[in-house]
Length: 343
Image (cartoon, rainbow, N blue to C red; front, side, top):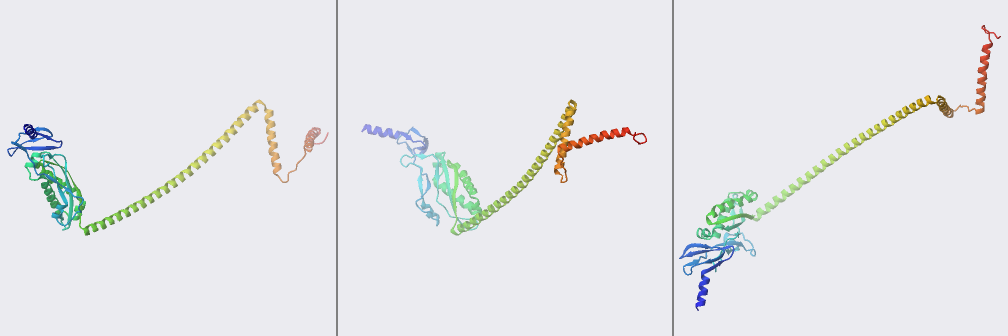
């Protein structure tokens, strides 16, 4: 029996707290200290662990969301306690508060169903338990109040375009209030903002019209770009054609110039060679020129219709006659007297 009593006494004195949790110790009903993760010692019968009521909301995905009243919406979400009811462990890790959607009336009298998600973490467990009654419910009510105030001052069009603004306002209000509750609001997200069926249908039609308008704009821009590209291609084609013609004329001119230069250079070299040959052997040069002259005469005779071809022997006879004539003419001139009579 003594062993059992000693075991129960030791178990009551030694308190082991798991990681990510804390325990609040009260002495004679008043807060005394906080047990952190690890092994802690407590005085039995005088001290005890407080078991607070701290919970958050999580959406029940198995139940379809209703949009009739806040009371019915509350039934869709269920509470999740942040405290172990047996040991009193209070979670200090980041938690999610996903409250049900609420009904809010906008500035233009339209029913809006906003859905916000809050991420928070308890940084001061003492304040979270002793400074506020039911932390999770207080955060939810503050989110609800802020959404009603913010969305109630906005029109439907402003709500559609201002989702980020609404989330920012909710987070600012939560940060200001939760600082005294020992809670850190890490982020607030507007998961969705739903509208009545007729507004959703109008928004769908408006969205479809915007998409058609954007499609028409994109098509017009593409056609414009195609025309610009076609014009640029035509312009480049004309430029390339002109450049090709210019390059062709330039190359032809350079070719003609080089050809003429080479011909003149060849003639100059020929004259120079002829001059050197004339200095060395005048008779050979004369013979070459005579042959060239005979070739030209032969070409002209071949091209003429009334040309007379004389055999080589006859040509030699004519040459002999011409030579005899020259001799007779010389002798006849010498036998005349000064008055023209023969001697």
